[in-house]
Image (cartoon, rainbow, N blue to C red; front, side, top):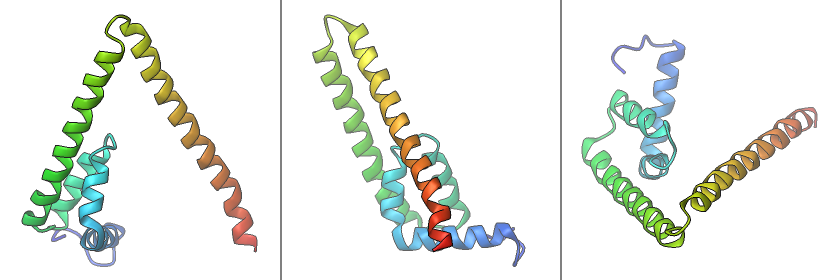
Length: 121
């Protein structure tokens, strides 16, 4: 935060990020391990706001272990289930990814439509 000029948008963003990491740093670090891109952004932000190294190491270790275990189990179970027909496994994986993406977009659009109604009320 040394390089942020007080009162600027960057300083406000870093202050807010520092506050959020101070309040919920552990859960943010663990959850963001599972979100592509978020892992890198949160790690860089934690360094920029000088999140305590001991806390970061503790929570990041939990996140890395849980993510690695999850990934290994998915690979093992998928390999067992689709050993004879890997194309079915690929189709299931792509189908799940598309379904989740579609679901997130539907929820996002519904929330966007509901937002103006809340503002008017």
